[in-house]
Length: 261
Length: 261
Image (cartoon, rainbow over all chains, first blue to last red; front, side):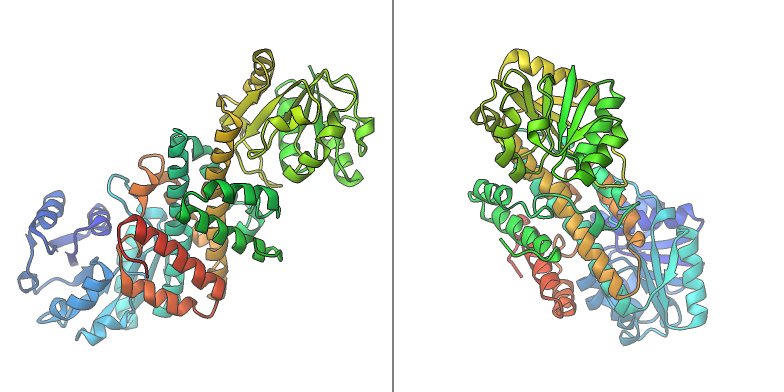
């Protein structure tokens, strides 16, 4: 089972290593730029290309780990001349049909719901991987690859996967943005964000024993108007922080049946 | 060193148990309602009262764990007739001066920066505790109590403590609210929030090795307009989710120097 990897960013790097660790053969790596193509190819000890026309014709599976807009743009070039292979992408919010529209016959999705950054190795065995395929025999092949990577594989259609992705954006990307604003506020009083880690870990840990609704604490949950107004006054020198504090507090207040600030 | 605990909510319950575990003597528990007063008193095997006039006069330290508005209202009643004792509160955003204005001579703050919910035991040793006191000899006593509870005790003045509290609201309360919205979105496709836990743990774990700014991923970080607009379209049936998605995405876009949606 020969796999060609299209893309060389953080997800592609993590996926390429995980596939090799799981015993899969990577035939080639593509990236738009020579730098990133050669970096990942060297890491995996495989050849690379920066031209779709030079992709091998005989891989069994082509996995696109391109950014969503690049995937939409280049899918036809990836498929052309390789119509008999299986084409997969790893995007949360791109429909499986992108491959059909690009001329593929056998295709699907392998969406690893995780956050990938340079410098932080991911434990793939625990990553929830959502798969989907154009036909049952393709689904079996995609499922086999996914099961080699993770012990947490499920089937999900494109529409629900997009909603799942939105939920992941809230739970990961947006929660992380709250951390970033927290770090900026701390920076103003000369305190390092490390001080927040026991609180951050407890916030995450509580969700293993109770729902996020049950776990909610803080001034808005207590409907403590005086403290919230004191906080808004202090934040009034920074429009972005002020607006974010008010928006999220109002959202919590409303979820508890209380009036907005 | 006899301590009277004023309040019987989640923080008071956790603090009372931690103080006893650390070898401190709890003299009495106060709460506004008989139910919660008797519950915590029974847990700690100490007497309780629901009247400030019945608080003992001979405790060395009175610690208010009341909600912020109740603290502001009742501080004078707590101090009256006990002016020689030490008065502490545990609030992030209430100035130490509340005690001076209430007639106390020796007073301070013991702010445990953690989230306390029923049904989840807190590891007090790792909780960052911020202390402040009216005089050096009082600070030593407050510091001694705090050091019995936690191995992470720091001195911080009231103004910076309030900003620290705001940062904690973002990192904990607001991040948790993003989890709650995520859970509601998942609920619509019949998926349990448990599926998010590997992602939530990785989001938190990344912050041990990189800053939140560095850790940011997702459609807004990538400036992926098509996906963000697709997500907004799907969320347009729920005004709160739509507005939150747009507000936080715009905030991330702006932080990366990109135009708003």
